[in-house]
Length: 466
Image (cartoon, rainbow, N blue to C red; front, top):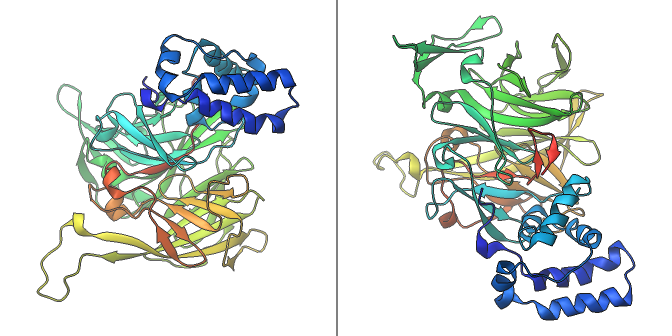
């Protein structure tokens, strides 16, 4: 797989300047090594980068020193240095094989661009403020829906409404259990035994809420999927995928290797999920929280907190702070349809509808007291919200990010699953209630939905790093 474009390979001179800054923090190095590093920086500069790469020539440093240096890099830079020459590639591989690469990764924005091929995704690095291009496996990313992202994995739905996990960094792709194994989905076959349509049954728990509906193969994904998550399963060392899906935002999950989805009745109206201390916590649209232990033979729903508020137009999110506290976030959006007003105003196309985040409310969840405590700041923390798994990070650990800010992508159902030109994507200042642009709208396609991902080099099939 084409990981990063050729012009993205790191300048050797840049790396060596990084070495000079970083080495004193890692280990005490000798004057001889310092002279060698200075010599390296003088020898290589950007105009010679192509030649050095082509000839597999690079300044020689011991592999253990290279590994210590590479361990400081974020994954985009790490992949680039691993492409420079054979010795650097060996250090890059050894770093993963020995489990020494544990650097926290700054989230990146994944999106597509009309200027690129249908299989190409753009990765915007917040730490570098630059874009990388990645070629993803078939089917083309531009033909898919993106319904979630967790731990470096993107959950996509193809044109038959089947789900796949894709790691944009490694190119690994895993097919999830068939959509036909979701409780409320039934396949409709033709005379030859080929699936032609899907029937979506309208019930949750034991309550029927409407008549079944029939959908084309590529249309079901628009009606069925809301949000997806990938969680590490410490009991098996593998992973669990959780779906929020219709009718009325129910839960289903699948463990690695499962052949079907397992339904989690009897509740519904879920907005977000987190996985902590071996339990799945699910947030309802009325600020209730349910917990599920997915490891046992019988899964029982435990009510952690009863419904406390009723929101109509807000999106709700739940995230665990580095301290262990659970945060609940309400995102209020306004809808605008243009400058014309009044009864005689022309009818607006969906592409002209604009969703804008106007207000964000913050709460700390007091699980013991089963109540929400309103707070007005996240101080030296940062939130990432949208279709991806919700995250709360320490700004001190991620100095490139802005403290007391929320990085937002669009997950409005009325827009996020339609090919609209408008997306509610911004960096929201919690102190001033002001917003700023992440990436220019001219740079990205509105389809599939742009999403946050945290780059990850772990290969899920083997459970090992590359």
